[in-house]
Length: 186
Image (cartoon, rainbow, N blue to C red; front, side, top):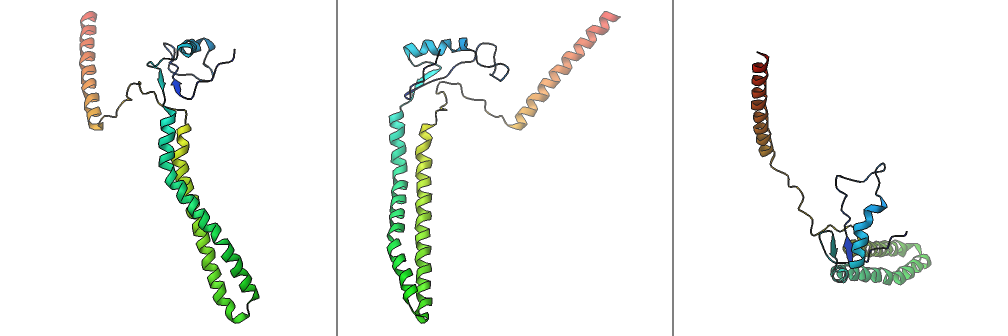
């Protein structure tokens, strides 16, 4: 049986079976374990392991955030393209010019090429900035908003104090056990 694809507008988290911590190569996911997901598929209601994702809103927000960067990239690309004709004209002038004026024209040509490369680099980085804001919306690894908050890391000093307290309790209990063993043997 072929499993249906989940729709883009909702997400479902498949809970692990009772007594199982993870899936592995030697303990893979079994088809029977899809029963809760298949049951959910027919009803598609929100719950602890199923939630809706407003993709349209996420996309609109990403487009709004990325558009200024993409516009800057377009403007820089157009500026680099606009420098192409003056560059070609200057290259032709350098070839047609006598040796005396060639050095000045070559300096202008180098400056114009440097400006074109700077515009191309600006376009490339602005495009990358916009893409970095836009493309993550397609990441399907969304965290469950109903999940319990993960463990917070405690202060190491508090952990050490807690461990010493537990160790003292263990030592007290061991002392009691040793006393009981001594009484029984006597």
